Amino acid sequence: MKSLCINPHRFILYACIVVLFQYFSGGFNTAHAANKLVVKIDYFTQEKKIPVALSNLDPFVTDKGWQGAILGIKDNNTTGAFTGQEYILEKTIVPLDGDVLSAYKKVLEQGNTLVVVNLPAEQLIKIMGLSQQRPLLFDVATRDDLLRQKLCQKNVLHLMPSRAMRADALAQYMLKKRWQQWFLVVGPEKQDQLFAAAVKRAAKRFGSKIVAEKVWDHTHDARRTAQSEVPVFTQGVDYDVLVVADERGLFGEYLSYRTWLPRPVIGTQGLIPTSWHQTHEQWGAVQIQNRFKEQTGRWMEEEDYGAYLAVRAIGEAVTRSQSADQKIIQEYLLSDQLALQGYKGRTLSFRPWNGQLRQPVLLAAARSMVAVAPIEGFLHPVTELDTLGFDKPETQCQ
Figure 1 (cartoon, rainbow, N blue to C red):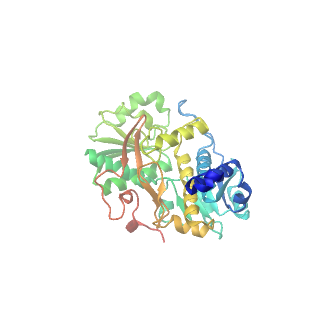
Figure 2: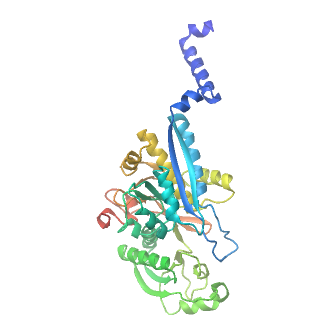
Figure 3: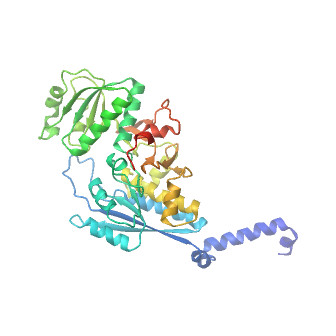
């Protein structure tokens, strides 16, 4: 010990080692915990009805979103151990036949102001206008443009790319390939019509042309009849790509390799625009893919990625602002100071005019990553990410 005192540099090193040992062994746990800033996040969802199986290859996943939130909390607490925060994740699951509004009121009564919401658009719209408390909601499930336009609210942040962003991503890549003659096939569901509207907007925006549009209204099983029906359905039209709007996956998978002309399929099937995909490996994505699969035994889905980003965004705001106050967190998240890491080669941020998360959109085939939009060459005065979806001059938000 005498020699350590003689050499001040060795003494400082020794003291640091002791401090670190005591920290990790629990020596400072009591004092450190007393000074921690506790941040509570509620994950709010409803049980989902298991749909009729269209393929045995795609099992129904009951915990989409929740597992991403868990991974985000782990990362937040890893950082919080050094920056003085503790994050607590609570879960509210409304039964399939339960009352979403009543359950949401109970969440608000408990004082929760940071809520990750995994609900379809219809349910989200109901709870958005329910409370004057206006907690900060992180929407990790919807892609409806209406929620980013006429029905937008300043306390709702959207983590999934909108339909407009997805369609614009496809249109940019099609323009690059000079595949600008589109044959649009629309399914019978309301969601299909909404995506079709986004496709039409993107075609007009980027100079492509929809040379034909047909509604797929066959009510029988496409798996059994596609070989005979699809060639007839697509006959008589000259086009570059077949754009399909089939969000439920009722028929879109059976169009490829069966069309009258040999043409690629894009849209909700074929080449798809998505926020996350199992084939994504760049920019450190392999690391989070492996961690997620080790945690869950399955691949990360879009809702998982959205919930992960929501929780991480909260962690980033709390760490930078050193506050758990909802208003301060919201102000930081909507500012130009936010630089959220999303494993996509660019920092992510929220559009202050509609709460949409700016992010690259992956264009993926079943087993390969084809491109990442925005495509090189599409410029914007602020950020190329705003070439996807509704830009500030186009906003209908009040």
